[in-house]
Length: 234
Image 1 (cartoon, rainbow, N blue to C red):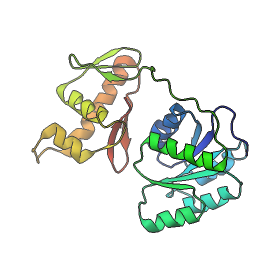
Image 2 (tube, helix red, strand yellow):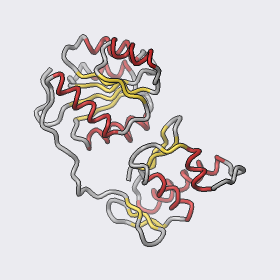
Image 3 (cartoon, rainbow, N blue to C red):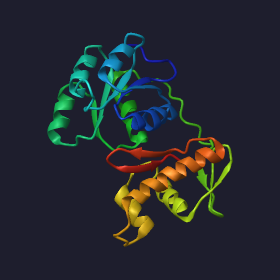
């Protein structure tokens, strides 16, 4: 397989739609990859009839086939890079994955920059690394204004925040793109109030997303990470 002359290609095989389409694929594109994503093994096999990829990111718990089996099929394609990204952190699964064809094994949640660095390392070993296009350091993003209760969109449009909304986004923004556990968020918002209803956090997130969408027409990059908590891609 010949690497893309400009941006190494990667296919993300992950059945969590939000994780795949809102975190992994756009994050890898920002890191300089030509990234696509599919939700199942069958969708992957259909995609491979249309184009080839230099590397693959595989979840193990796919709806139609185990990631272990997918890795075996991909290894038959030849010199490709395979990184398993899964919630299974046990040593037995790691050994099985690496022995079964994976070049690297990462446990969720993993930062996108760590995943990208792992892919670059794998591609160097397979001889398919190509000049990267790093993200522009000056690209605008969402930001919390230091003065006032205000969030600014990448276009500079302000959104007024309540105290709880500001506290939530401050905590998530400080996590540097990693998921924050719901328990930690509740502790931050409510202190020692053990009677605080966790459903109020879900309502807070829901209202904040709707407010931003209604105010400026942009989708707030506040991501629900299944089984973990929330992440803010500021």
